[in-house]
Image (cartoon, rainbow, N blue to C red; front, top):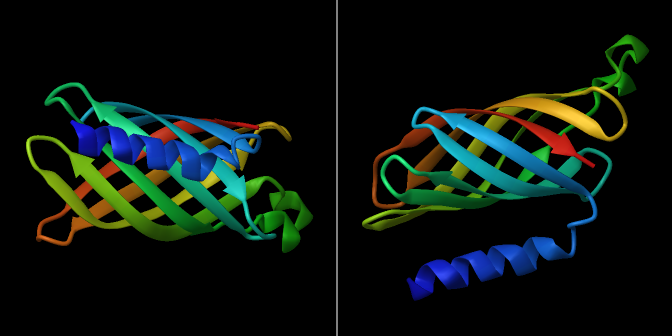
Length: 144
């Protein structure tokens, strides 16, 4: 339990400096889970995202931090403004009966409804260093 609390504290402190940027509300399938995240732009097309997803079906959760390449297609064509495809990765850990630490990869698209609200669809994989794979689809909203 102490490891879990330390991981949550590090995630909160690491992303706390960026808390003014965007808050993400996440729904993942399968397995069904709910999550909360923070996202911060680092450069023009780079963003950092940290999140925690809770899976109540088999009490466990997934925490990850990742660096995303996230360009706005409006830079290429003004008609595509607000469409932001992205990919990236970082480290993630799944906490259940046993803890699995590994590489976390994301591929998705965010569509901005206005300057402060965006909806996203994301495919995510966790590749634990011990072997195996955990993948899911995430839909959610970013509020800036």
